[in-house]
Image 1 (tube, rainbow, N blue to C red):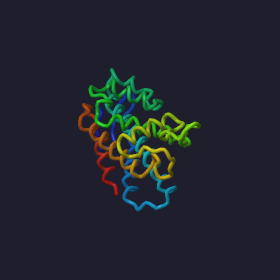
Image 2: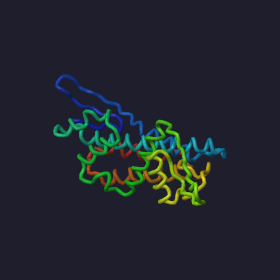
Image 3: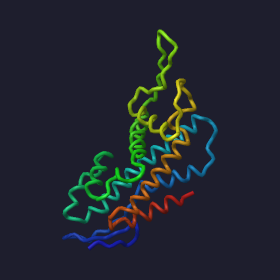
Length: 225
């Protein structure tokens, strides 16, 4: 029988050994650092601002993915009929973790408020994690003066732009700008708030009986300044 000694400590028995565990949830460290960074003065130079914003966005996506993996792991690890589903969780992509979560729980990830933004965040992270170059295109007719709205070469960035425009975080335009970019500080603030609300709702509504440690670390991380 498993015992919770502390939010990070546990113990269980096998046929041959008594096992003690110490758990370190990486995602809570990243969430705590995001809160810490938001409470520091951000330099005025755009290069530094944008670099900080990219770091915040990337870390929030990683924190969310680790959080979902932990919720699935804690729920299934000691259930003989479910344990095999998480045996390969360390090698799962976000898409596979999402399918795993949806298989384990009645309320699916897509049923929570803000899922369209979460999908945009994950796709954004996939580009940022590889430092994918962002290129804007503006088109002018050769035989006239009509100019099209800004487009991007990369589909992931195109879909992100549409999401940000829809939510009032970017303006439609015909002229490229170093200011109207997808990784403004305002964009980072949007994704941080959205993701934390999403995680909080999962903890509140998820039917797992093993979320105590996760919920406690989530609360502690959000309190960091």
